[in-house]
Length: 154
Ligand SMILES: [Fe+2]
Ligand SMILES: [Fe+2]
Image 1 (tube, protein in one colour):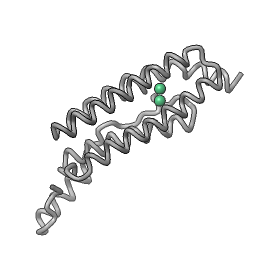
Image 2 (cartoon, helix red, strand yellow):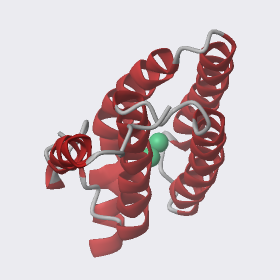
Image 3 (spheres, protein in one colour):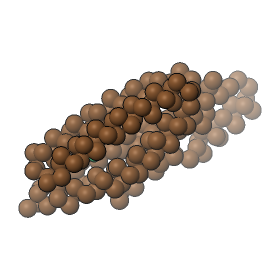
Image 4 (cartoon, protein in one colour):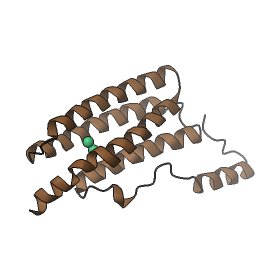
């Protein structure tokens, strides 16, 4: 259920809460790969995770959880395909391994989404996404940053 905006005091409190809401994952330039479209998509994924967190925090999640899971799944698929196309086009030596990691993550994302929906437990999905974001975008994707930048600058 959404926050009750009726009554001026309640509205003022809600207003203040929303304005002071802490963003769950703040984007930091250190996460940039330096490849604009991939960085843009990574930021898009972070935006979706933050939207889910906001929804949980303020009880907006009841009607939006299923669409968020679907949106996250579709967008991740698009991102992975574009990232893999880059890696293969540029002959990255670990492209196959990275693709396999993506497949594994998609399976885990699908499973986490289904379980969270079934158990009505959005926190489970949020925890999965945060862990995924930290380990994949902040670590595994960085492995090909120098390679790709060398390719573009070389
Ligand atoms: Fe990525
Ligand atoms: Fe990746």
